[in-house]
Length: 506
Image 1 (tube, rainbow, N blue to C red):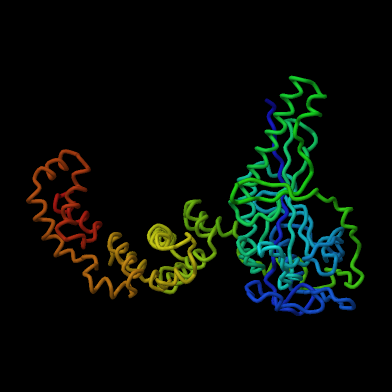
Image 2 (cartoon, rainbow, N blue to C red):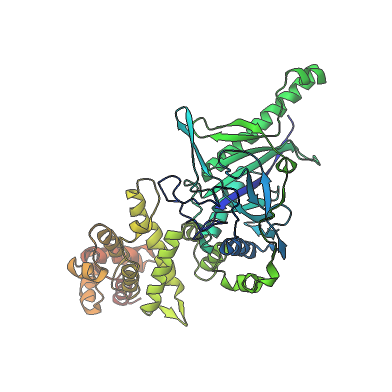
């Protein structure tokens, strides 16, 4: 059978975290539960009303462009995208067509076509029996649309890109991008063509994918569906000729499809529109924008306001602190866990583990280890849906975590004791020093006392001593282990090793 190459382009919509809607003063509150509360004549499309551009929304999209290395527009305008649907009160959507705010750029190695700004539609509910209901609270919210070039060739890359975009939105404060709440919605344009073909295959759009898992599975399903159709056509052609293919074979048609989570399959919704179907034209009620005339929208100003971006943070964690790619990804991939980790580092710096303003890399490595392996392990075991919230993390204050790491660095706690204290703080509260004192977990560092203990251990383990003297290095660790056992795990193993070597004359 012919080998096919998939080509995927993404269109991603994200609601922006502004105080008000895109063209009116209604509250931008996606958590409002009472339908049709945050509405006014402007966002309801009443005749005679005039929209006013939300300046902050424009700035957030320009910041996204600056972060992605795109070209910021000098001239831009808003257009009317004409189509009728109950969730569009005006009979058109204010969007951007010919002159988007941002062109080009790249995120996670995926080239971007454009980033533009538009207004969101209302929310329709169809599961209320015979009627459909429309809630206009969402109508008019500022909506960023990002379009990638058709350069993605597998479902995993598409899902990874969407995750990186979500992290970028969150790190810029541009939006929460919660997919389950509809704050970020992914549409995938998918086609396949024979390997070596110079043209793309027939494009199918899958809309409103509301989870990263759905993105990956829907794309994989469509690739398999397209492949099956083309393989069947190829077989029919070889068996009965072109007439047989025309009469019997299913065809891939340009259409919009939806994703059914229950059946894990896509379904046809409607024929796919082309841009001319929307009859775009410049909105006569909104002014043209000349970005270069607005000083706070200059590229230099926007770049100066950018925080550390997700890919920059990964690089810092790995290059400066020696964290593994997996550790760095766990910290960057969860803004909540990442913020908690940074708070721990701030506590370490305040406690004196910083050198020339930077936290000691060994302390950072320890912090990542105990946070990601021990504390997050406890939280995940207790999490109902596997998500780690800020409230869950707060069960142990970052300052307490910093104090624990400081005690380890000072030789007061063994690794075993540190793990026990984390579990106790999580279950019962308290601070590391108080817990360690109350439970006898402070590591014994008194060399005089430890010397007496190791002298007895050596006297009682003549064979291990003989093995060590015969060149068996493992025998030394055995003796140290006996010393740890004699002190009930309370001794500092490094000091025990040092004393043992001294007593053995090594």
